[in-house]
Image (tube, rainbow, N blue to C red; front, side, top):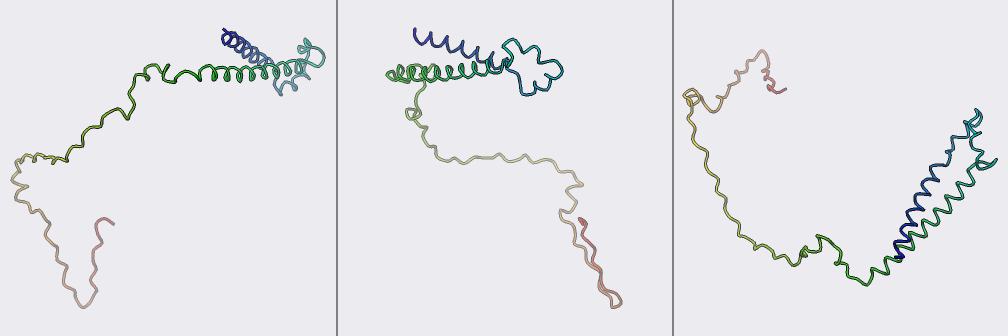
Length: 154
């Protein structure tokens, strides 16, 4: 009962604090006061609403923090005596990792890979040599040096 009452007060303080923060004017509003925009701020007096809203926001923020701290302490004291597995939902029925039996270690098995089927080789491919024949360099002559050809990749 007491927790519900403080929870309602907590929500009302949060809504009021949000409204007061949104009602405050930003720092850029002073530039528009020279053009006649400052005349509408006389509802709260000659000094404007800055003092009223600032003080109200500070008071509401203090009440909000006090309620937050008070409800946290209250909930910690009331829920400290109960077990923590009581309200776990679906995770409460899960077995711990230490209770799950391990699978037996299987001996490594040799994996047999089937051989590729022998494909019919065309006659042209069968008669072609698998390696290129080595090319012989020409014999050097006495007049000019032998130039070696550059590799094809460069």
